[in-house]
Length: 174
Image (cartoon, rainbow, N blue to C red; front, side, top):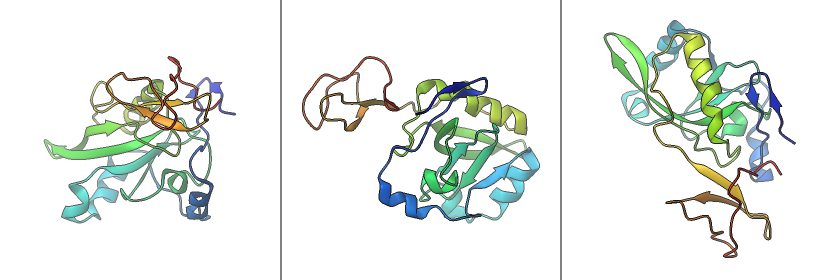
Protein backbone atom coordinates (compact mmCIF):
# COMPACT_ATOMS: atom_id res chain seq x y z
CA UNK A 1 0.00 0.00 0.00
CA UNK A 2 1.21 3.49 -0.73
CA UNK A 3 2.40 5.52 2.23
CA UNK A 4 3.74 8.95 3.02
CA UNK A 5 7.48 9.56 3.24
CA UNK A 6 9.42 12.73 3.99
CA UNK A 7 9.41 13.35 0.22
CA UNK A 8 5.62 13.01 0.00
CA UNK A 9 2.84 10.50 -0.53
CA UNK A 10 3.93 7.38 -2.40
CA UNK A 11 1.57 6.13 -5.09
CA UNK A 12 1.60 2.53 -6.23
CA UNK A 13 0.34 1.40 -9.62
CA UNK A 14 -3.40 0.68 -9.45
CA UNK A 15 -4.20 0.44 -13.16
CA UNK A 16 -4.93 -2.59 -15.33
CA UNK A 17 -2.57 -5.53 -14.77
CA UNK A 18 -2.13 -6.02 -18.52
CA UNK A 19 -0.41 -2.61 -18.77
CA UNK A 20 2.37 -3.90 -16.54
CA UNK A 21 3.57 -5.67 -19.69
CA UNK A 22 4.60 -2.20 -20.96
CA UNK A 23 7.34 -2.17 -18.31
CA UNK A 24 10.74 -3.03 -19.78
CA UNK A 25 14.09 -2.97 -17.98
CA UNK A 26 15.86 0.21 -19.03
CA UNK A 27 12.66 1.57 -20.61
CA UNK A 28 11.91 4.14 -17.93
CA UNK A 29 11.30 7.75 -18.83
CA UNK A 30 14.19 10.16 -19.35
CA UNK A 31 15.49 11.58 -16.06
CA UNK A 32 15.51 15.38 -16.03
CA UNK A 33 18.02 16.69 -13.49
CA UNK A 34 18.58 20.13 -15.01
CA UNK A 35 17.25 22.67 -17.49
CA UNK A 36 19.95 21.51 -19.91
CA UNK A 37 18.71 17.89 -19.59
CA UNK A 38 15.23 19.14 -20.47
CA UNK A 39 16.53 21.19 -23.38
CA UNK A 40 18.49 18.24 -24.78
CA UNK A 41 15.51 15.88 -24.50
CA UNK A 42 12.92 18.29 -25.93
CA UNK A 43 15.23 19.37 -28.75
CA UNK A 44 15.05 15.78 -30.02
CA UNK A 45 11.24 15.89 -30.33
CA UNK A 46 9.37 16.81 -33.50
CA UNK A 47 6.96 19.75 -33.72
CA UNK A 48 3.80 17.60 -33.48
CA UNK A 49 5.08 15.88 -30.35
CA UNK A 50 5.99 19.22 -28.75
CA UNK A 51 2.42 20.44 -29.35
CA UNK A 52 1.07 17.82 -26.92
CA UNK A 53 1.77 17.23 -23.25
CA UNK A 54 4.23 14.50 -22.27
CA UNK A 55 3.80 11.64 -19.80
CA UNK A 56 5.70 12.26 -16.58
CA UNK A 57 6.36 10.71 -13.21
CA UNK A 58 8.32 11.89 -10.20
CA UNK A 59 10.29 8.90 -8.97
CA UNK A 60 10.99 8.09 -5.32
CA UNK A 61 14.29 9.97 -5.55
CA UNK A 62 12.28 13.11 -6.36
CA UNK A 63 13.48 13.22 -9.97
CA UNK A 64 11.29 14.10 -12.93
CA UNK A 65 11.05 11.43 -15.65
CA UNK A 66 9.56 12.23 -19.06
CA UNK A 67 8.27 10.00 -21.83
CA UNK A 68 6.26 10.56 -25.02
CA UNK A 69 2.57 11.28 -24.39
CA UNK A 70 1.19 7.92 -25.38
CA UNK A 71 3.55 6.12 -23.01
CA UNK A 72 2.09 4.41 -19.97
CA UNK A 73 2.96 6.01 -16.64
CA UNK A 74 3.85 2.59 -15.24
CA UNK A 75 6.40 2.12 -18.06
CA UNK A 76 7.80 5.62 -17.45
CA UNK A 77 8.34 4.68 -13.79
CA UNK A 78 9.75 1.24 -14.51
CA UNK A 79 6.84 -0.23 -12.54
CA UNK A 80 7.90 1.48 -9.32
CA UNK A 81 5.91 3.57 -6.86
CA UNK A 82 5.99 7.30 -7.61
CA UNK A 83 5.58 10.60 -5.78
CA UNK A 84 3.66 12.12 -8.70
CA UNK A 85 2.41 11.32 -12.19
CA UNK A 86 0.48 13.03 -14.94
CA UNK A 87 0.92 15.01 -18.13
CA UNK A 88 3.15 18.03 -18.71
CA UNK A 89 3.34 20.49 -21.60
CA UNK A 90 6.21 22.87 -22.31
CA UNK A 91 6.80 26.16 -24.07
CA UNK A 92 9.77 28.45 -24.56
CA UNK A 93 10.12 31.70 -22.65
CA UNK A 94 13.17 33.92 -23.21
CA UNK A 95 15.03 30.98 -24.73
CA UNK A 96 14.29 28.48 -21.94
CA UNK A 97 11.79 25.64 -21.71
CA UNK A 98 9.12 26.16 -19.03
CA UNK A 99 6.13 24.11 -17.95
CA UNK A 100 2.99 25.72 -19.38
CA UNK A 101 0.52 23.02 -18.40
CA UNK A 102 0.67 20.19 -15.90
CA UNK A 103 -1.89 17.76 -14.51
CA UNK A 104 -2.05 14.74 -12.23
CA UNK A 105 -3.95 12.87 -14.95
CA UNK A 106 -2.72 9.30 -14.57
CA UNK A 107 -5.33 6.57 -14.32
CA UNK A 108 -2.54 4.09 -13.57
CA UNK A 109 -1.43 5.87 -10.39
CA UNK A 110 -4.43 8.13 -9.61
CA UNK A 111 -2.24 10.57 -7.68
CA UNK A 112 -3.62 12.64 -4.85
CA UNK A 113 -3.80 16.39 -5.41
CA UNK A 114 -1.03 16.85 -2.83
CA UNK A 115 1.35 15.20 -5.30
CA UNK A 116 1.77 18.73 -6.67
CA UNK A 117 4.38 19.36 -3.97
CA UNK A 118 6.61 16.55 -5.31
CA UNK A 119 6.13 17.77 -8.89
CA UNK A 120 7.01 21.35 -7.92
CA UNK A 121 10.11 20.19 -5.98
CA UNK A 122 11.31 18.09 -8.95
CA UNK A 123 10.90 21.02 -11.35
CA UNK A 124 12.53 23.48 -8.95
CA UNK A 125 15.41 21.06 -8.39
CA UNK A 126 15.93 20.89 -12.17
CA UNK A 127 15.68 24.67 -12.52
CA UNK A 128 12.63 24.51 -14.78
CA UNK A 129 10.02 27.29 -14.62
CA UNK A 130 6.54 26.15 -13.64
CA UNK A 131 3.03 27.29 -12.72
CA UNK A 132 2.02 27.66 -9.06
CA UNK A 133 -0.18 24.54 -9.08
CA UNK A 134 -1.64 21.91 -11.39
CA UNK A 135 -3.20 23.69 -14.35
CA UNK A 136 -5.66 20.79 -14.57
CA UNK A 137 -6.25 18.91 -11.30
CA UNK A 138 -7.96 15.51 -11.44
CA UNK A 139 -9.80 14.16 -8.40
CA UNK A 140 -9.70 10.36 -8.09
CA UNK A 141 -11.79 8.19 -5.75
CA UNK A 142 -12.30 4.45 -5.36
CA UNK A 143 -15.92 3.39 -4.90
CA UNK A 144 -16.14 1.41 -1.68
CA UNK A 145 -19.04 -0.88 -2.72
CA UNK A 146 -17.88 -1.82 -6.24
CA UNK A 147 -14.11 -1.02 -5.84
CA UNK A 148 -13.93 0.79 -9.22
CA UNK A 149 -11.76 3.89 -9.57
CA UNK A 150 -13.62 7.05 -10.58
CA UNK A 151 -12.66 10.50 -11.80
CA UNK A 152 -14.81 13.01 -9.94
CA UNK A 153 -16.20 15.57 -12.36
CA UNK A 154 -17.78 18.89 -11.40
CA UNK A 155 -17.80 17.96 -7.70
CA UNK A 156 -20.21 15.05 -8.31
CA UNK A 157 -19.00 12.39 -5.85
CA UNK A 158 -21.14 9.56 -7.30
CA UNK A 159 -19.75 6.34 -8.77
CA UNK A 160 -20.31 6.17 -12.52
CA UNK A 161 -20.28 2.35 -12.31
CA UNK A 162 -22.78 1.59 -9.54
CA UNK A 163 -24.27 4.95 -8.48
CA UNK A 164 -22.97 4.80 -4.89
CA UNK A 165 -21.68 7.88 -3.11
CA UNK A 166 -17.91 8.29 -3.30
CA UNK A 167 -15.83 9.15 -0.24
CA UNK A 168 -14.94 12.78 0.37
CA UNK A 169 -11.29 11.85 1.04
CA UNK A 170 -8.80 10.31 -1.42
CA UNK A 171 -8.84 6.54 -0.97
CA UNK A 172 -7.38 5.06 -4.14
CA UNK A 173 -4.58 3.15 -2.38
CA UNK A 174 -7.08 1.63 0.09
